[in-house]
Length: 428
Ligand SMILES: [Fe+2]
Ligand SMILES: [Fe+2]
Image 1: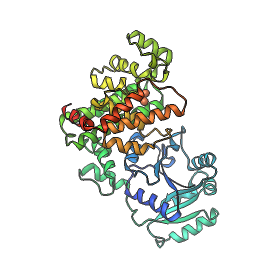
Image 2: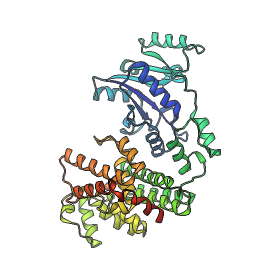
Image 3: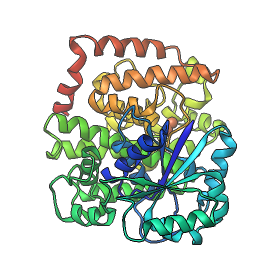
Image 4: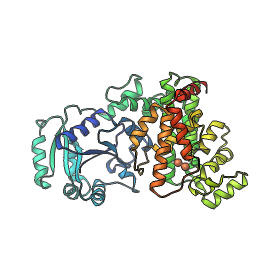
């Protein structure tokens, strides 16, 4: 396969990036372009880059489904600074038959000599240099010089619609409420909903984000960095789903709408709080709280933390809200009447589709994400089916009611009751 690798901070991702990815596919016949957000870009360390969870959420919302432009988390797999040379070497090792194309900007063509191990990079990939036109001043000479230095690895990638700067976008969204023309709408909505880049949050009150910060700091003291990232991913993926659903009903920016988004955000954040315990500790914790697990649940160690998390959210994080507790308690498996509990659906779907997830084979996560944004029940149905697929593929057991949950959701979605969840949403 011919694979394009497009790295950067994507803070935020915008239409210029998509134009570059499309142009690379077209001009060099690439099978796919992998958008690879940098976890800690070597040359931008400590320069106030937006948190990983938000950059990944924005990318996952911006990418078109089925065009062969995909989010890639390779740079998030390793600790410490991620160098392009290491990433390319890793990709080459994993897929030795792939032909790699590394997409860079004009600035990077100039700086290339200062990059970490430039020779190694040039030997592993063809470097595609995005430029508005090859007649740009000095471009041709510089390209020729680099090709002399690095064995002809560089090629020009002409992209007419490209001259957009993330810096300018960040400044504009801070002051303007109007959708920014260079942003994909879903990304633009996300920025405003959660108050990124210093703009006023529209889907939650500022206090809610403060509460989120407090709780995530407490959670950070009890779970691994990996688990914390996942929890933040579920928090914002579920809150954004809820926001999409409320927005489609025109009730997002009402006090009730904002409360629902807040409650979903916090339930999403805490859904795995009991993962701080090991198997034995979880059983002891359940016993202490007099929670008896069904036999089929007891047979699957990996899902004990759902019911335990429900008790822990109450005890340690002082959550009293029954919908939030329910969403946390049922997040592993769902429930037959989950169509009547939008928050449970949001957290259940987000647990499977949050942007740090990339190990799940099929159906593709971008498709599930798209379905879920439009229809909560369809999203839950798809995640249930995908979970069964996944469990069977890895030879793991599933609960006795999982197939029944799937069938129930399927029946509801395809019947007159299919949009009933929207009425529930309006009443909550
Ligand atoms: Fe979980
Ligand atoms: Fe989880």
